[in-house]
Image 1: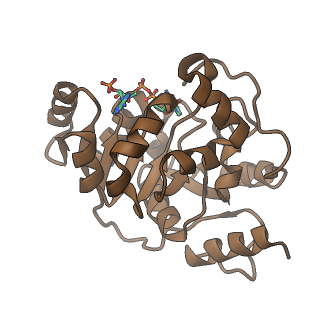
Image 2: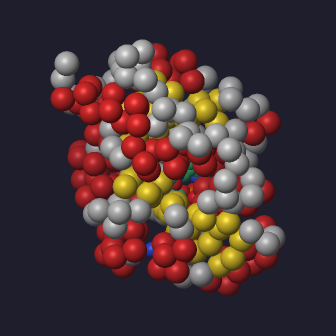
Length: 257
Ligand SMILES: NC(=O)c1ccc[n+]([C@@H]2O[C@H](COP(=O)([O-])OP(=O)(O)OC[C@H]3O[C@@H](n4cnc5c(N)ncnc54)[C@H](OP(=O)(O)O)[C@@H]3O)[C@@H](O)[C@H]2O)c1
């Protein structure tokens, strides 16, 4: 058995999948199925961050919203009600048990530095996709490196889980209307962070499906075979054909999103 498969099975086991029966790609069960409030720091409150903040607040989680425009975040927090408040990106990163980073990819190098001491060792959900037309050279580098490993380099020490990357933001608000039917492909190397992210993903109606480690995060992008809405089984079938080596999926995407 390869080293990669061994560590994948270890992670799968740690989040509730028995190694004996686990195929290479397996759905992740949240470690705790009970409803438990989590504190989520949101950095980037645009289409994705704002949508996810709204559904998580509705699900009972506590949110701190942040971007470079505090006034907008205060207005959004007021709209979301008692579970949401606004702060600076550093305040949001300190607040969260888990931090959602949902900004244009070109903002990651600076955020990686300014939040370094706060996100080190913390679960970080990375929705960010590199697009050369929007993000410039950093996107070229990230696409060559693979988006998962690139984010890990830009946010050193964070326990990164790539999720919500290849699905339109508008759909994120309505997955709970069809609980369990829509799969959410995720990639990560840290069992605890994967379990935390999985809980948040389930809480808004998706079924998290771990496709593998961060090296496979490059397949979680618009324009890849995993993009769009699929059932968990469909995701498992596609994911079983993916590999860490070889071409990263640089298929021209419909445009930055
Ligand atoms: N749109 C989609 O359907 C979709 C789906 C999946 C993944 N994604 C990816 O997810 C990420 C976010 O996408 P989006 O569509 O939500 O983008 P967006 O609507 O443009 O929102 C970006 C947010 O990031 C904030 N921001 C930008 N630079 C920042 C910085 N240096 N520090 C803190 N906050 C900063 C912006 O606010 P300020 O400018 O006021 O700071 C804004 O709140 C992107 O990487 C995108 O490729 C998008």
